[in-house]
Length: 236
Image (cartoon, rainbow, N blue to C red; front, side):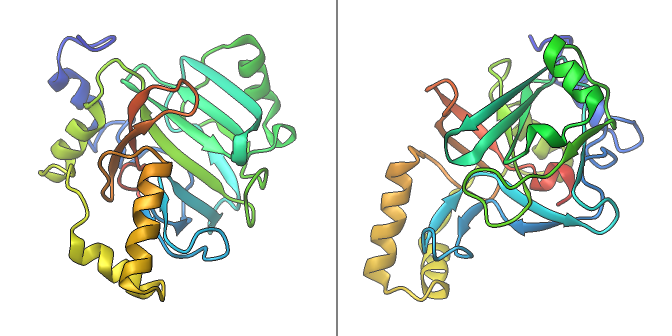
């Protein structure tokens, strides 16, 4: 049974577009530009020519600059400073079967109200301002690195919601043809590209990958979990 809900159908009701907690209406980064998508990424050859990016990056917002708002009421929050290559990791825990992680933020740029919620581990209201995108860790400019993570209540809950919203499942791997296109766009030979791709899969402990969901080791817990792109969920 899902926490606070009697059925998946009851949970899905909160995503009705006419309701406040809809993914279509949720306030996260209004007008934000998606600078790096989820999945195979060829935009940072100085880092890895053919890397697997397991989140989305969002830089400038045309309406709110670098502001980040809380998309859902949080039942708990965490802020991890000096966290591996991300520099920092903000974790927003919801009661809906997932948590949201935002990397690269500076503690100093969090709002006083959000710092109070962090210090006392208090709930934090939806649509309230959290702070601004940061540039900590391995980062080439101010941006938010965002991942949606199953918290173990129901590992497939977000994919079920995506199926409900879009009418189909997104649990599909890249095809060989698609990977070859990425390799060509990266300016690599087929042999070199496949070596790099397989190295990335092994390095990131990824078992399945596509443009919305993957299953890999969680750096925080060491356990294998589902990670989801928030691209479709937050409209970026």
